[in-house]
Image 1 (cartoon, rainbow, N blue to C red):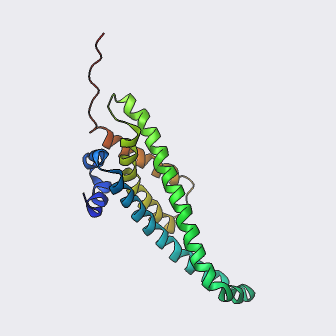
Image 2 (image 1 turned 135 degrees about the vertical axis):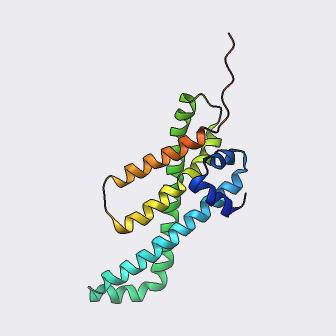
Length: 169
């Protein structure tokens, strides 16, 4: 699967989300890092626009920013990329851990590494939705609702995992 197919599968194809468990980790990592890079670029543009609008009100800050602009923007981009990567990897790992519980309840076979790959796709659409809605609405329930949406995506994908064989006594 190429990056576009992974993105398409992350939106509405739980069967393919479950199938990524057999893909190499390199493909999934490439998808995750490209997704994080896109999120970082959008957040950086928002930062630059916000900084320019805030600094317009404070004349001294504007002069200071103009003097260190060559240092501020690259450093801000790198720090934003690192923090976004850290946040996204923790989020994927947490949902994969929760997915292990769902896997046991549903009596399906799988390992944490399989669920991590599936969770990497399951968090994509809710993250994009969160990013888009975050520009329009501020609601303290939004992260919880989007986390539940991620769990729904994960649950739908886990339904396509193979069932455990019956136990013999």
